[in-house]
Image 1 (cartoon, rainbow, N blue to C red):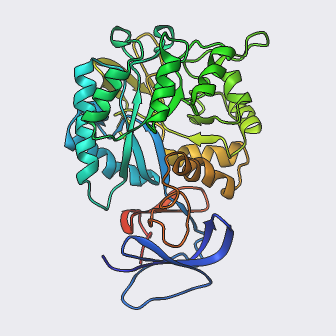
Image 2 (spheres, rainbow, N blue to C red):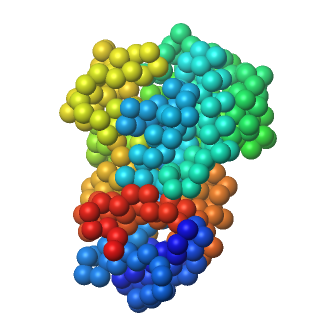
Image 3 (cartoon, rainbow, N blue to C red):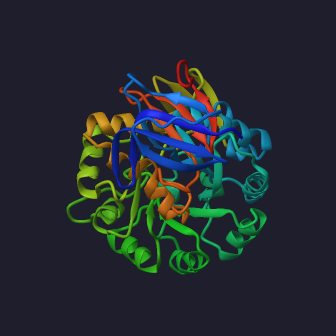
Amino acid sequence: MSDLVIANVTVVTENGTIPSGSVTVRDGKIEEIHEGFVGKDEATVIDGKDRNLTLLPGFIDVHIHGANGHDVMDATEEALYGLAAQLPQEGTTSFLATTMTQSQERISKAVTNAGEFIEKQEQGHAEVLGIHLEGPFISPSKAGAQPIEHITKPSIDLFEQWQNESHQHIKLITLAPELEGSLPFIEEVRRKGVICSLGHSEATLDEANQAVEKGASHITHLYNQMSGLHHREPGLVGAAFTNPELLVEMIVDHIHIHPEAVRLAYQVLGSDRTILITDAMRAKCLSAGTYDLAGQNVTVNNGEARLSDGTLAGSILTLEEAARKMRTFAGVELNELVKMTSANAARELGIYDRKGSITKGKDADLVLLDEKGCVVTTICRGIISYNCKGGAS
């Protein structure tokens, strides 16, 4: 692997912004961060001189099902490879492979496949950091696009079966806290080091707060498929707003959440508790049409993915677009944006020692944006994984 220099760019580090800086990369790691131009013999150089480019840590998507015709539930190596190869085009350098409610056998196949893929994946594409188990321990009344017939009550035995099949790679699980057995389930799963997220739920504020007391620390796609904020019953949205322990996902495509509701959430949560996700399905990056989602037909048109009854079925959002919308609509500064696209996820997953910021010694997961917030170049663990025209020299 040859050395790499990214020069004459604005570098957003965890300690501040360097208006005209350089970053050198060696053996997949960030070797040095400099002010001004620093050249290096026999190195590949990305020169941002006179191009107004900004370097951020690579995006981390903790909630994504698929893209470019691939889905985690396909349970094939080809599907995960295709997803990992596609995501750098939107600046994503690592992600959690997200499952959905299905038969126990299909979930077993998906987590087994993901676990095997994680342990043999190569550098040069987005890294699969682990598995996000979304369902099947959710509320039937808030299923959304999750098939109701496969929903079941929380079961430690079933979870442990899937965790063993995945080679211990399940990192996050979404469940409804009001279901019978949820509280002891949350307590046990947290004891095992897995993040518990509240979502697809009719929980009252009190039920949600009890789950937080047991160790729940995450909210799945705020506002969507959850009990809403009411002045006499604040529900799960109210719990998300009032519990400082909770890291809160948002799908910022202006379809799943009205722009003003995004702005409100950001004003309440700030950048320290917000995490941008896509919840994307296989149709992302493809043309309008009909696609499969766990055996259900999903129609994609005008940027929306919906079941035949009109229910939203994931998204076709990119993190590049979500980040751009947060900057332009909510007025988010770059140092705050980095928390929502990278740092918060890395801290939560316990990998901030190697990802989530531009820091000497960390993985060289980097994304270079132009002045409009569009991805120019993405680097995954030191390898240029995506480069649009004019990205590298």
